[in-house]
Amino acid sequence: MDSNLKKFILRLADDSMILGQRLGEWCGHGPVLEQDIALTNIALDLIGEARNYYAYLASVEGKKEDDYPMLRLEREFYNCLLVEQPNGHFGDSIIRQFLFDSYHYYILDGLKSSKDETLAQIAEKSLKEARYHLHFSGEWVLRLGDGTEKSHNLMQDSLNNLVEYYEELFTPAPFEVWCMEQGYCPNLNDVKDKAIGYARQKIEDATLTWPTEYFSRTGGKAGIHSESLGFMLTELQYMQRAYPSMNW
Figure 1 (tube, rainbow, N blue to C red):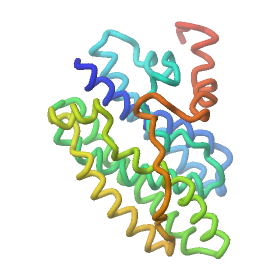
Figure 2: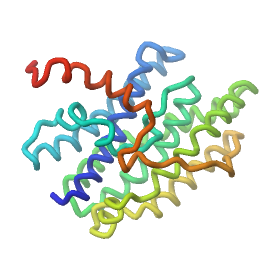
Figure 3: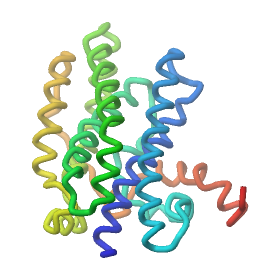
């Protein structure tokens, strides 16, 4: 497997794994029981998708599936910065989820036509779940954005703080440029047009304002992350680090 394709698959997997881990932190802490369960289920969906990518790589490279999330250091992860940001309050997590979902759905939709049959199959399988995720986060953006004055202001603050991580999703890394040229990855400009068009309309419907002035933060796709990822990996990888190669 070409190293560019491997990095692209890791990038897809890492996005889902890290966001799934973040959402798992809500388990038992959701604002109401129904949403507590919903966030946990979304976390399981994302981790399940990540496992499919890791298993694919493991089958090609003769490794174990767990080697990829459990044995790499921060600089070896290719997830975008958005998904590793702390949960904050419920509105922060909803905006983070919505921004990712608006990208995730359309990248999977494009991956259905990937030249790599395994990637296309994973995308096909994951798309139904991604559609639900986008519906869930979008509905909560509407409820909270067009809710009380307090919820509106909190959601606007969340959007202002997190939108700076959004552009990275559509800014192609060198390995993504190669994958687009080879037909493994959909054109990210096309994904961007669809995702941002949907996201901005939903934000407008929620009576929120899309920020016009912000500094776009990047680096995750190159392995340069915020300190939040290191703390998360400490928890995620603890068992494997403490008891290497342990068998269940």
